[in-house]
Image (cartoon, rainbow over all chains, first blue to last red; front, side, top):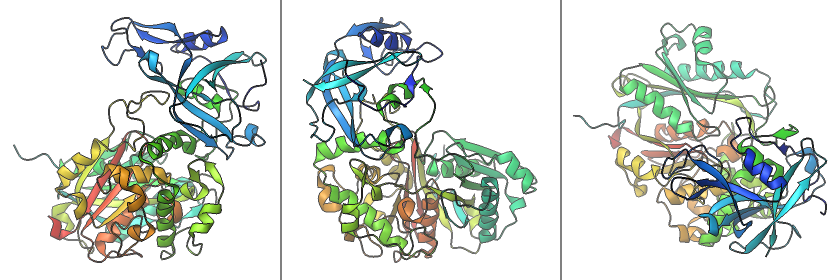
Length: 146
Length: 393
């Protein structure tokens, strides 16, 4: 695995104390994308919530799905608001929509040249970025142009 | 059953502001700023602060209403409300809450206020420093998405992509605020004009926001005094009536991790029709608009969603001349607003809207009778209100 996209020092994710998103973070550590799917109506839902907003079932399960999608929107960040990013230079944040999972969206970074044009609607594939040195260790889901 | 409305039931009879400082520069503590603005607003109304019987605020204001009541010797506190939500989305919602208390007989005289001292407390525009993060932010902060500008830029990028909006449209909004601030001695950016070339050459914060697309961060406090319409005629200022006020947000606006179905929006699509219904006005009746600039892109979308301009016509509509007092099609942010007067979480915009009705703005729109405020685009809940002169009732 190559170096992480962003310089070290940002807060690392941990599962919420109530456990709501623990399967998601545990899944990324094993290079699996697990998102919520309703046991009542079968629809995918994200971000994590205790209830299905469609059928109001509490039977929310985590299921594996493919980490590929399309760029719904993006931003190129220039001004660092955190000391860890002082020497970072510009970086790209993307909002990726998963058409095969009821259009749920995930936030990540678009790997590659941060100054290159970004096309809304372009296809992207997931890439698991492991932070094994962190305590506790975690994995981010990043994106590359497909 | 009588019509359920706030239209014409409540009026603003006094406004007060402390001097506005750059962030961290206030010589006074935040609570003292709140007290000073409230005392000033009561002086403007010609009443004793002891006769205030309610407080309404927003954005988790730290100046506790009960402490204010104790400090000011208020005889009988009858209303204390806080509009949910961070940012400036509650700026008009707090007016609505205070007005509703008066209209329903719960209170007689409510002060709406907001106080901020970012030297004493933390800054908005900086990322958190913790080594671990959980909850919704765990899904954004590790990717470098953590400041308000970064939270909203993707909405604006998507809107600009969908409707082919050019950077010049955002620039026009910024230029209008800075131009109006040059007439306003209270403005933090008074004496610091901005031209198109300086805007174009300014650094990116996060695309599509240049430095001058982003609000200031300031210290200060602002307050306004509300009473019933019946009482308003006894005050010195010409009555400034509340014609309508709304708050809220669209379907699943807060769906976590940027999953709201209607994403590229300022959150006003469902509110604007309700606002016009209550106020009984239409966009073409609005003489002057204050629209909260957290970032210019939110102003642009909110103006579209309030029906002043079609989404695909932004490049024509958002021209500097159209947005300038006194003669523009839609004079915008006539005090200098959050970009160039002061970032008081938008309560300053409500006060400027009242000044326009009173005929006392430093960039006065001649004969302004319908004066509108849009508060806190892109957050949830958001809010908006319309003030009117006597002739509009």
